[in-house]
Amino acid sequence: MQLNFDTMYRALCDKDAAYEGLFLTGVKTTGIFCRTTCTARKPKPENVEFFPDAAAAMAKGYRACKVCRPLEYPDATPPTIRSLLDELAADPSLKLRARDLRDRGLEPATVTRWFRKHHGTTFVAYQRLQRINYAFKRLNQGHAVTDTALESGFDSLSGFNDSFKAVFGTPPTRRGEVSVIDLQRIETRLGTMIACATAKGICLLEFSERKMLETEFRQISRHFGAVIAVGENPHIALLERELHAYFEGTLRAFTVSLDPVGTEFQRKVWEVLRAIPYGETRSYAEQARLIGQPSAVRAVATANGMNKIAIVIPCHRVIGKDGKLVGYAGGLHRKQYLLDLERGITPLLADR
Image (cartoon, rainbow, N blue to C red; front, top):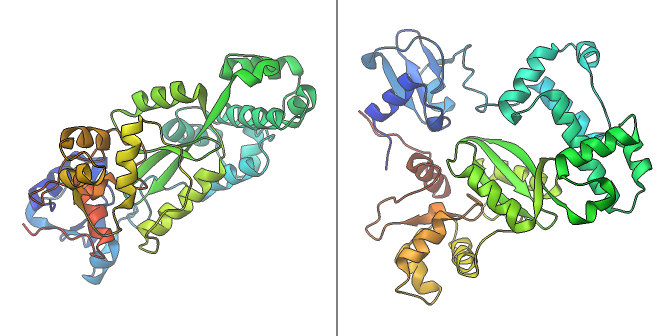
């Protein structure tokens, strides 16, 4: 499925974020090129042309829009925010208040708006979750409750106990009854993705607008008997590096450890998915034969749809037996992009 002119122009007029990263728009009357979600006034259809990437637009003499900044990744983390995140990752016990932000040249209200948009919480609450997550891991390493509370930046043991119980539903002394699934956002060329990981590996990787995301959160939380909380995780750190290399075209096989949630049958189907070579595709019927159940085509298709670890477990490599694209939770436009990327093709866009 190639994107045609009408589809792209409609996405441009609707500022449809689902098409971020798939094409850029050149405006003939101004000589600039924009991303899909640009807030500038929309040009007439006869005054636009579409490009697969910034290099193609600049090769035709267009310059980047100063409003939507198409040379940056969608939702890219500003350097100042990235600096804050790195600082907190290095020392989760930090408590940065409004005056600390101002000392760094930041407006507290701006920081709070960014965290509300990208993490669904305030900067203060984000820090608290980071400290609690850090404390939970320290306690599980055998550190004393009082020492952990102070080392995690809490002013009192009672405040630590209250915060711990608010997140995990149990006091620190009963932490053995609870486990944690770490959550982080990862920005990619195709939009923001949500990653979750246990101590064993990645258990979820989905595009942030996935309609089933909340249901999947409940499923993995129930399966592991765990609380999902924002926190650093070495598996997510490795996944972020590997995703970047994948989209740059320099990585063909992911090495990050996985901890998928599914039935025995689903996991068998997903193992077959992971065995599909980079740059190749399979049909549902071929998948069914490979697991030794040739009549289970529909069950295989359903299992593919239940995959919670996009791209790494490559359900995008499954197509219809007639060679056409079939359903993909991230959208068929993303599926086409991933397949083109793996075939070494610059994602091409159909002419009008």
